[in-house]
Image (cartoon, rainbow, N blue to C red; front, side, top):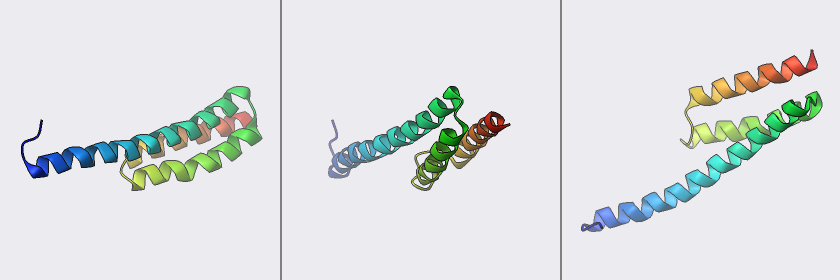
Length: 88
């Protein structure tokens, strides 16, 4: 248990930030799962629309510091390549 006032404040703040970051990460995962599901079904149009919805959500995760920008760039690039392969 924390003994200093600042350490107690930090514990409260960390718990609050965890809730926010966890919710944001969960939301991003949900959007990614929608894209993955559409790709698995082989539905190019649904995959494309899900991808367009997932993209800003993932970029928002980068700007909020939840995900690293290179990680998001890599995931988006791979998803986009798989969606393009469906259309061809």
